[in-house]
Picture (cartoon, rainbow, N blue to C red):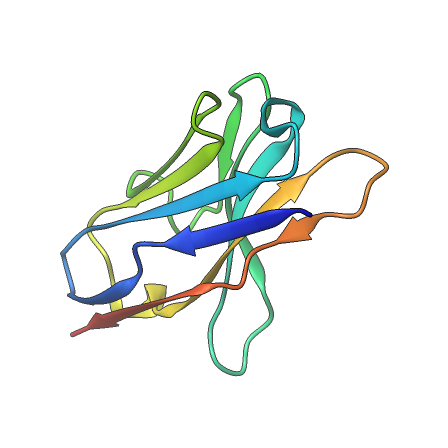
Length: 116
């Protein structure tokens, strides 16, 4: 059974930092592209950042220079370091494991709230 379990969300003031973790089980973690998405109330889910099995990263323009995605294959865990947080970063953040020609796996989400 595949499980993606996010943690690290919470309430932080603008300008602060949070580190999200996504612990995966039931998959061969190292071959998956890991991604973080977010969904704010009333908005569509959007891609925040992704890291391929080879370590290539990409980011949404809105978070470039502030967020860093990383992975630890030995721990089957992906991370999202979020610095200089803004109120507009407030959303539920979801972890996703992706593999070409396969349906993605999703975590349950973790709430991030940034107060002004």
